[in-house]
Length: 339
Image 1: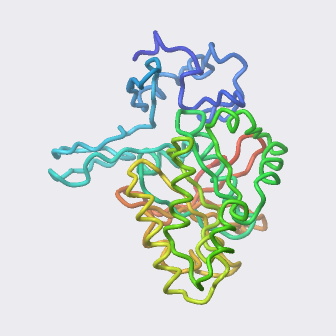
Image 2: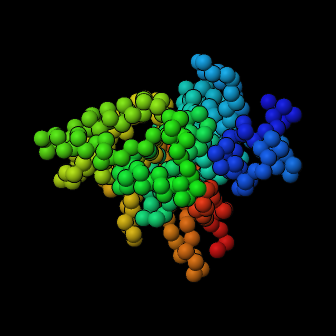
Image 3: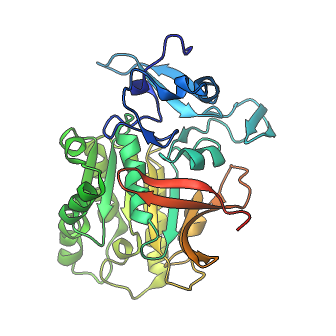
C-alpha cells in the first residue's frame, strides 16, 4: 500500500492509540491523521522498511497488519534474505516459515531481524531494578494494541498493586483488561490451590501448565509473560534442582506446542553473579536471551540492554544504552560505543 493512500498514524505499527505516542520517532503525535514522519520527509524510508499484509478474520473487517522489515517469513524453498545489511543464503527445507513478533522496541526488533520468533520462548534476565517487568509489560501492551491479546502471570507482586503502579507510570491498562486484550494473573490466587491441596511433595507440572493454557485460551492470547519464572516452578518445595529443570522443560515444550504463543519468562540475576537463570537450563530452552543490567560508565550509572542469544538471527554482539521513560517504557538511546 502506498503512502498516497495511507496517511494516518492510527494504522501504523509504531503508533500507540492508547498513549498517542510514536515509537519510531520517540514523541507524542498531535494529530494522528497528519503523520509527522511524512512531514519530515522520512515517511518513505520508514514505509520501505515495513512489510504490510492484509488479513481477514471471521466477523471482522480487513485490517492492515504491519511488521518491521525484513519480511516476517523466510522463503521455505530456499533463496536469500537480508538482515541488517547481511545477505543470507537459505537452504531449501531449512529455517522456513519463521514469523516474527514485534517486541514494541523498534531498535531491538531491527537488531533481531523483525522481533521474536512466533511461538517461541525468550528469557529476559537482569538484576533487581534493571527493567525486566517494564520490558515485559511493554511487550504485552504493544501486542494488545495490535491485535495480539496477552497474559501476564505475576509471581512476586499482587496484580492489583502492579496495575496501580502501571497507572502511575502512565500505562492505564484498565480498558485493555476490560476488553479482554490483557489478563493479569496473581500466582498466589490462581495457583495456590494447586500447591496447597496437593498432598504429594512434588507438584505435577501438568496442573500448572493446564492452568496457564486455560487462561491463555480464555482471551485467545498470543503473548505470555511469566515474571519471574523460578518461584512458579518451585511451588514452595525448593529441594530438587533436577526436578525443577524437568518441570521447566515440560512447561516450555507444552506452551510451544501450541504454536502461536510467544512467551517471555524473566529471571532474577543476583548482583555480581554471572548466572543468567536460577536453574541453569532456562537459557538452553530459550530461543533468545535479553540481558538487562546497570553499569557504571565514566562515573555514571547507565542502563544496558545486551542481546545475549538470538537463535536464527545474525545479531552482532553489542550492548545498547537505554532509559526507562514514563508512559513510554524502554527507550534505546544507541549502542554502547566510544564511552
